[in-house]
Picture 1 (cartoon, one colour):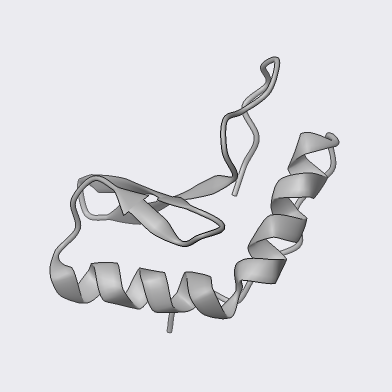
Picture 2 (cartoon, one colour):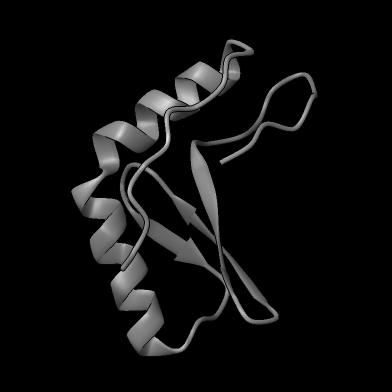
Length: 75
């Protein structure tokens, strides 16, 4: 998760990368915009559901100019 320096960012979200594909997932609720193969999409959605509180906490840290706390990636 990283922050773009601007006047603000829309809804809390993160980007998932799979090869050349980039998909935006909203939090909360966990949802996506874009395309990932179904298996990868379901894995990212499940991971995001499990880590939703941590993702939102990191989002708020970034909004306040602080570094996010690492979250265990998909294994």
